[in-house]
Image (cartoon, rainbow, N blue to C red; front, side, top):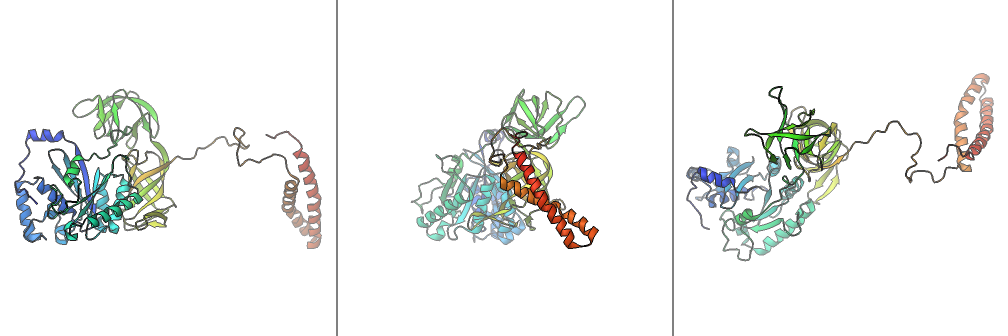
Length: 533
């Protein structure tokens, strides 16, 4: 393949302005260990002429010292910057790199593939618009590949590129590629990755060889049977799903801004939707309504602000709001609840179990949470949920969380930032899990005063079919009442006579006589219409 040793020049002010006008795509490269993720990204940077001269010199020197490609450049060293990564030839930490082409800006996230560092992969994928899932043509789909797909599905990353790497090791075989493609699509569907639009296939499969650059930027002469786009062509053209601008307005309050007695504002990041001066809003969890008086920023007041902008809002009314509250629009408001059902990815060595207590940080609010009893895990082999007593490290499962107070929440599919959370160990303050809200359960309503009579407004399946007593029911009630009621008669008679036979006879006589009296009493009242509905 053709390489481009010419180094990129440092950007000027005009070039920076030009870059600001381009759309930005964040994508994560994931997959099992030793599938060539770092090599692929390094090759992308190199062939798209994104490496300054000093980095090229450093890469050449590092390739001679740490490289595994003989006398050639080892592109994986561009992202594996930790000493341990270079010594072990694996990716440990998440690496972020920016590059741009004539069509688009990119932030590429190189995620580790080793099972031990799955939490780092989940962290990188949580901010991605698209995912490259690398699979070695000679190794196929592994258990870790399935785990990464399940994490992507949980985080709502629906635009997936299956990159079948190392095609040179299988003789550029189309049959191998098609087999892996079919298996991958089946697994993706099972874990919940579905098309957001029936007209668009959001799973694209590309065969390539990152080491030699085949199908990375230029088409490969070895795979003429492949008619699709190269990797860079697809990345430049794809339009991933972005819902933050179309989603309902949400701004979690980060800070109550009160520099002097004459000003009170509420600062935070607009996580979704847009806000305008004069717009009607509500403050949750209280639900109090008000309107926007000003949108204040460092550069001056705005008339309108959209998702991704940090602002300070002032209201037309005196509203008691604090850190953790959420400012929303008046339509599509969040739920306010003490209990949620969530899908979680567990990061800690100590498993998640029922009854455990953690701190839950959702947006800008932190509350105490306890784990419910209904735990399930996702079986990576069977790709089906199964009941479990615990969720172990690197496992994905579902649970319910009970909070110590009511908080505003959204379903993750509707608003990601107010529908996702992390769990924190209250003793060590380590982040032990991350989760996405699937269901928000409202607390039961308390009725006061208590209703002692059945409701008459609607028919109920639990109501008696008729209100008159049957003979058998009246007799059964009489027997049960007198049998238990005559126990005290037996005790008193035994204390007086000291003879259990006499005491038993007295009690038995009372049972028979009063059963008959009670039975006739019930039959008479069954005929009286007063008090019935």
